[in-house]
Structures are given as structure tokens and as C-alpha cells.
Image (cartoon, rainbow, N blue to C red):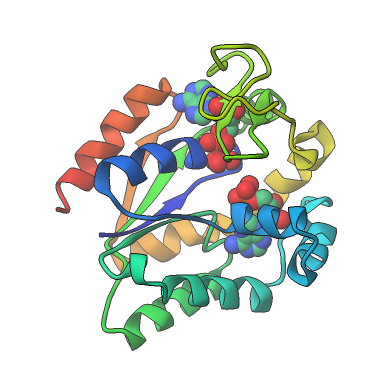
Length: 216
Ligand code: ADP
Ligand code: AMP
């Protein structure tokens, strides 16, 4: 199964992606995670990406598309994948369709997690992430068992640099301008499904499981 997760920053894509990936046994590919691990490793890609990410802007298409194309060629993507945070522009969506077409495959579902803007700021500024294993928490809505420590690996949780109020506002503008046109793009392709992301995490996951379960 080939699945795309769509939705504004803070919709819960990363949170749901971890659960989906485990249940449906497909690799979770997050372009944000790929950039962050390159930033941590101070690679040329990381240095380039950081200058955009810290400002709440998108990393240019020509950089991002190449990364995803390479990743999708890996063996673990043969039977499907879950894309989280890609595509984020119409050019990226078109490139993804071309990549799929070349290998005679197609995207099965583009899953939109809808969350109105008034929820986003609290979700993003309360997000805490594990720099070691990528676990994601919320100080109020999904707190770790021990305050400030990752449940999975015990590492000290951090706040992402792009989760400050100012940068979140910029990211929302970028989402509205550049990413939200993908909703019509996938509606027109006939593969858009929608879930209400304002419900609790396990309830959202229940709705997603019903949609994806019907695809298997
Ligand atoms: P995204 O990957 O879409 O940017 P995340 O999955 O990282 O979003 O979620 C953003 C923040 O909101 C995290 O702190 C997460 O714990 C919290 N969160 C995710 N889903 C929900 C939900 N259904 N209800 C409340 N908080 C949520
Ligand atoms: P995320 O972890 O998905 O919230 O992404 C964090 C940041 O990485 C975004 O705000 C962008 O700056 C960058 N990024 C992630 N995915 C993409 C993408 N598909 N295209 C461009 N930039 C991206």
C-alpha cells in the first residue's frame, strides 16, 4: 500500500505515521526527519536544509524531490510506503506521480488529517521530540511517562527550533499558500480520504485504520 499523509503542521502526521507504519508494516518516510538527521550530522544537505527550516520555509523542490526519489528506490519500499511531509508543493506531487509511473505503480491513498488553525499553535508549541529516536510527545495531550524523558529510549526530550510561535505562524502561511492546493490535486485524482484530526490520538488512528484497512 502506498500512502501519503497530508495536513497542516501539527495535524498529527508524525504521530499517526508511527502507528500506521507498525500496524500496516510499511516504512515511514518523513522528509522532515531526513533533513533533521542530516542537520545533526552536519552534512552538506543538512547545512543547506537548515537555512530554510529555521525560517519556516520549504526546502527547494529540486533538493527534496531527489531525496525522496532515492529513498523510494530502497528495497523496503517495494511493497509500499507511507510518506509524511511529502509532497508539500504541486511540483513535488507531479514529480511523485512521475516516479510512480516509471515503476508502473501508483499512490493508493492520500490521507488528509484536518485540524483547524486555532488548535495548531498549542499543539506545536507544546510538542517535545526525542533527538535520539524521533519519538514525539506533547506536554499536555501526549506527555511522556517521565517528564522530559523519551518513553522509548530514555533520552532527554527537546523542543524543535522551528516550533516557536513566530516560526509556526510562518509555516502555517507556507502550508496555506503552497501545500493546501494538494487537497484539490488529490481530490481530482480520486484518491483523497479525510479524517478529523481534532479527536484524541487513538480515535484518529481508529478512523485511519478503517480507511487503510479497506485498501488491503
Ligand atoms: P505533524 O507531524 O503533523 O507536524 P505531530 O504528529 O508531530 O504533527 O503532532 C504535533 C503535536 O500535537 C505533537 O506534540 C503531538 O503529540 C500532538 N498531537 C498529535 N495528535 C494529536 C491529537 N489527536 N490530539 C492532541 N494532540 C495531538
Ligand atoms: P516536518 O518535520 O514535516 O514538520 O518538516 C520540517 C521542515 O522541513 C519543514 O518546515 C520544511 O522546512 C522542511 N521540509 C520537510 N518536508 C519538506 C518538503 N516535502 N518540501 C520542502 N521542505 C520540507
